[in-house]
Length: 420
Image 1 (tube, rainbow, N blue to C red):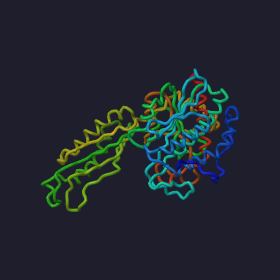
Image 2 (cartoon, one colour):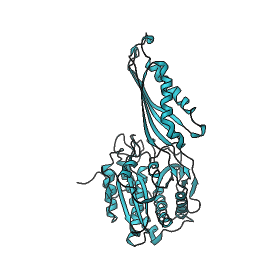
Image 3 (cartoon, rainbow, N blue to C red):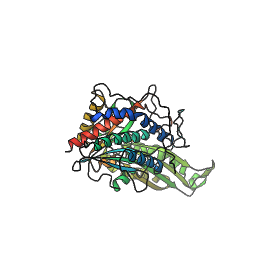
Image 4 (cartoon, one colour):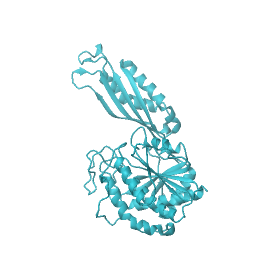
């Protein structure tokens, strides 16, 4: 049976692949640059196919099947995660060498693709609006090149490719990978994430925290309900809900240091169905993001206390669900040294760019709770106004695919050499 993600034949590709090495860069060993140039059109076709056939978090079965097929064609032996919606693949070099891991996330978002492009999503309400199709394609390209080095006996250890599901939801897919042994024997782990604010040819690097912690908060309020003419005889849940969504975020921020960057934002609130009926249930849900790890550890207790203090005078009953998401991604200094050297080699001396800590969350952080590593930001900015991540019109400059492959191949080789 042919998979829905079988690559298309004869796809027309724009000549934007950047097949030549950037000025000031160092060539990849054993003429891998030439092999990459030959592979770029196929990689772009792969990215476009994945983009047009996105799969939501936890449902990445066909995407995983495509990844496994492509890795098998490169002579590798991929294995599916227990649920079948992710892939781990070791590229075996020197048997007594270290193990370095490279990770890509593969899931899409519940958005309707609004782009007018040939590779627009074919699935209503599902879209690769965060660049995970690029992450996946880059790592496939890295696997193809490193497999060649391993066949030549020139890979100084083992490189583990991790194609992770469910980055966009809770519980996080990284925890599934860890439970499945994805970090066994790994000494360092690296990842790229698309950054539309950086142009192609730039990689954003930062020592220390590069993302924020991100948790989900849901508050359910209940009361007897009643007539809007007599709120004094019941509990006015709409009033209580209004206090919750306006007062709690401000009060929580006053309980923590200002430089912790705590941000509580409710993205959904609902109560009632009739203009003259006080409802018996009301709900608000949102995210809490914070830059500081110590504050993240204390956040559930602080939120719970503030919510109860604000709602207590209203008489509503409170049910708080605080779902721990992910800590900040905190880049290890030595891992950033490896990435810096790799980026200089791949892109020349101007390839490294400064990057701030983002308020976005990334479950790559859970890997870094176990082994040192680093997340880099891959420039994918297009000409004209850039569209931010998680917007239905998001797209990338596809030259970034070849850039990402070169950077991650150099990263793997330098990490193996440094860990000897």
